[in-house]
Length: 337
Image 1 (spheres, rainbow, N blue to C red):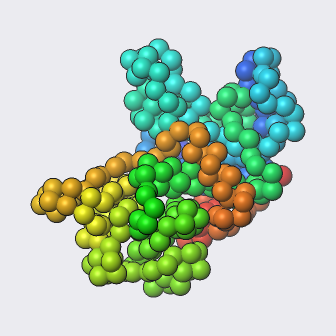
Image 2: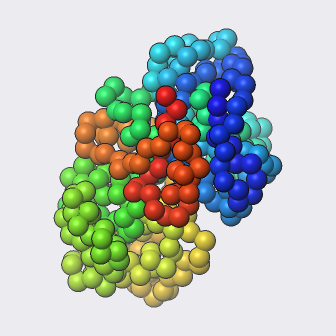
């Protein structure tokens, strides 16, 4: 088979030949049809994040495809099933955190002594085939194209489960800060929930797009958000913590701020407004597989459609560079079939 490899720190991605992985007991072999390029892939390549694995590496945790073989003992998946691959395959099962029997979400990924993470510390989905535990797959709904399903395995999952974590109530208003890969999906998920949706973006070229995606109101700053009536929930989806702090100006009393975009700058918030307005600050990523299943179903119903740029595997290096340069609109997806 062929796989896309990061040969070394900061180096361009390469397409190389590799052996098709052996399917072990409890695993399935998935013929990958599409795999999205996440910001995490960029940060690992650039050395901003590390999960203790040396280069060369095969990244990719937004993989979707078809089961072509099943290992001994697998009963929940069959050859021909369309599936998506979970980022967190398993915890170690023996550390203090795992002994608490916590869900397999990103809190477990952060606190387990030895989590198994697709495309981070084991081979990922940027390849023709990947072997993965059957329990680390989810069925894809009929009618959902592979190239649209791929981004939902991470950024769509994050956007929807962050909204669910905020527990919106009827009549509340949702603001989405950052109209990029995650944000353009968060707008659609909020609108699909029947909630008044406000886009916060300082990019003039994205303001009309935000309206097309379903935003009822579009503003450029937190001050403008406040003037437009504010929001009960702020979903912060990009990598600028300073943008999140600015958008706080428009969060209503007893509102919830959900941080979902990973940023490397300091998140500084004013003390008095947080206290006097009883605001809640929540961190959120993948909050449990049931939310991923919901996110996939909503997309299959036609209520959410990822905007993707698709690249054949032979153009993987180009796809990566578009993502790394922040030019992808809004997800670079590599196809393998």
